Image (cartoon, rainbow, N blue to C red; front, side):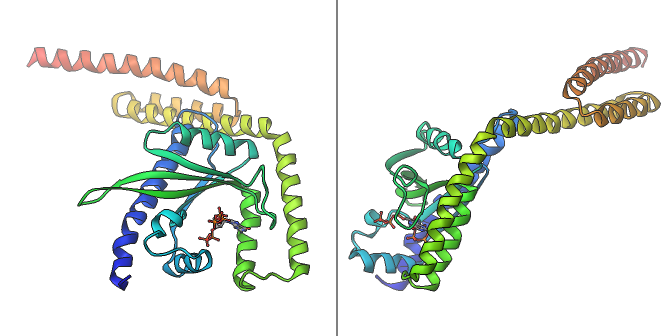
Length: 276
Ligand code: 0O2
């Protein structure tokens, strides 16, 4: 393949990664906006380097004609979750999307690799719109916990350092570390419900405060400034109590006040219109 063609070939993969990053980050934000627990903690992505593609082709005897079919991870998305249980939830979310179709699934959680690697891989078909035509390509989505990611990232660097032949004493340590990671994930799962509640409460508080400040700002434009300062001080007092019910009650009261102010402002405008 001529060297210029690599860029042409990889551009749609670049586009796919950029689009999917936006989509998965939005999915996380949508959960937050709706005060729901997000099974997605963070998302990253990359297009495989030419040297890495060539290496894989050489190792597996893949020809250039077969490359796009056989090298499934030219475009790669990595989704990091907090808990093992979240991994399947993310897989379900992907399964129900209309903009990608799961081609295959490699479950290295149920079938841990000999190296100790654990992760769920979904190979999906995804279509990008290019100037010339739509192009459907494969994307590998790796889904794993933060702990699994820590292990995989470290082990990957060692594989690079030792060119795939990690010395047995290092392999042994990595295997022990992988077992410890599995145990850590199990321990964290025990407190999952509590952590989820805490995170949802914190999100509800963030959204309530955002709404309240927005209302206060609107009131400041319409209402008696001295009254609004009093309202703001009351907000600070309630906020310091860290009581969600009280904050919610305060927000409802503010809505009523804001409604009254708006009605008054419309009245005043209409009266002054009639007078002129
Ligand atoms: P990169 O881009 O540097 O991450 P297979 O024929 O199925 O055995 P294949 O086709 O490579 O092999 O698929 P597989 O096993 O699903 O691996 C794809 C990617 O998963 C790898 O990409 C790694 O990112 C990750 N992975 C798989 N096994 C391991 C492992 O033992 N340790 C770590 N750290 N990561 C692993 P590449 O090709 O390594 O390239």
